[in-house]
Image (cartoon, rainbow, N blue to C red; front, side, top):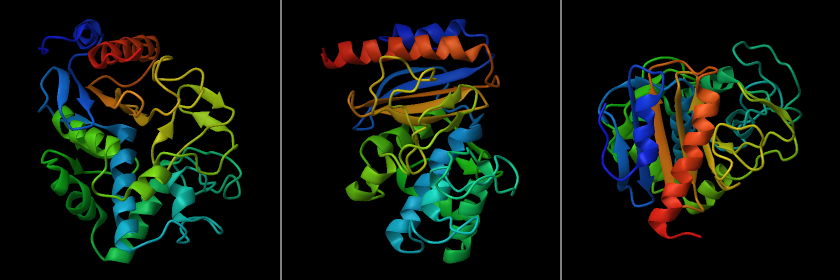
Length: 282
């Protein structure tokens, strides 16, 4: 695994207990500030898929195919509830565990319902809609949804760097919709972040998880509360820190587990320090 010069944080990935990994630090302009590994290697994204799917759903909202308040999922639930894991649906089944808006129940099933909702409204197979609405305009040529909408995409560091730039400074959705995408939906409700325990509250946007003041967390303690993103059980993550005007993408081929939790937190703190130094932020 090779790295570009100038980032000791990214170079530290060479010591991680993974066979393959790639990473990038990206600016709002889309410039790759630093990179590690083969940026063109295809990895399973696991739940980082949800960032792609959510962005495609928001493009459908912009196009008028669906609305955030379009009914979808359990009775009383809407597209907004599903994007923000507030529909009450179970993680992997169609069991309803709570009324909409009462609990933050992380649900991959909810994202499959979202995909079905957009597919029905547009009469376009959702994997094709995602490709046409997000991947093609962003130049994400190696990215594809090959499985369920909650966790079934594949991509590369190069492609996700383009998504990261879009999430920092969007051109596929309006500033107004982006503001909703990255702000708390259904404030004050509690729930679990997989692998990191119960959070009170467990704030979420329209797709991205919001860092806020969560402890423990997979981002760094020095990431701003405005940081948002997602991690995946494939050992993958993407975060965007608007205060830093930068983002970080990491893909690996080892499933998330006890190895990742201390490494990721320390790694992300080091990345934040490097970005602050690069940008002369004090």
